[in-house]
Length: 384
Image (cartoon, rainbow, N blue to C red):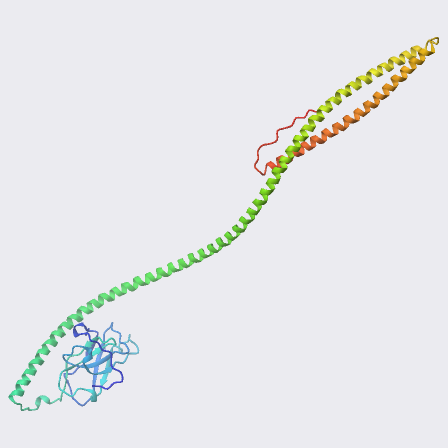
């Protein structure tokens, strides 16, 4: 057997599980002359792709697994698998490593997984003129040869049956291969469409994901702004609540002040009414005093006329006149003082009216932001 640095990959798979139709051996001789190199020619089928550790072995006919090789040679990988020359390959076996007996052998192509991909017809190693040599044998040797021939015939029949089976298997495999090839092309087309669809879907998903990320960022930013705005509104609401309390307290104070002003207004109105009545009485008194003064003047004039009246009467009349004049002057002074007091009261009333209007306006301006629709009832103050 061949001495090699590295043993070829083999398998314990039985013969029935091998595929012999993917590599076809060509120009195989019935016998090869011992002592010379032999060249093995083989053809790779269309759908078979050779690999780096594929090998061709010489097996004795009747082998069961690829571990039973006699010798082997590594195959040479073609540079271009698509060219026609790449399909036609050869490998050379050196004479030193070939069998020395006359048993039947065959070439087998074994891939790097240890599976047989092709097998040749059987051949022998014997001289060319062996059939012309007269051989003298004994009866036992003849019987042994006949027995050997019977075994060879049996093996030949088995090989023929195996060949027919292999041919049928090859035909079935070719049909299956063609069907699988069509299915593969269909699957490739479907796969291509699916890849295109997946690519489009992926692009769509990436676009949607980018949009969602942007929307998420915007929503996060808006949420932060809303949080700040909520804090501001809460602070503003708290301040407005405090201001509202102040306004309510101010309204209550203004209301109390208004009530107090109303009371003062009523009191002033009563006082003004009394002052007006007193002023009328004073005016009547002044008018009466004027009439008395006029009457006294007339009487004085009448008294001045008769010279023969007594001086005592004149003096009495003069005193009475002076007394009346003093009363008139006193009435005038009182009237002037009451008139000034009336003017002062009128000024206070105008100020009270202005203050009342300001209070009403303040209440209205304070009630409107609070949603208070009620208004202070009008205060009717009749001032003459």
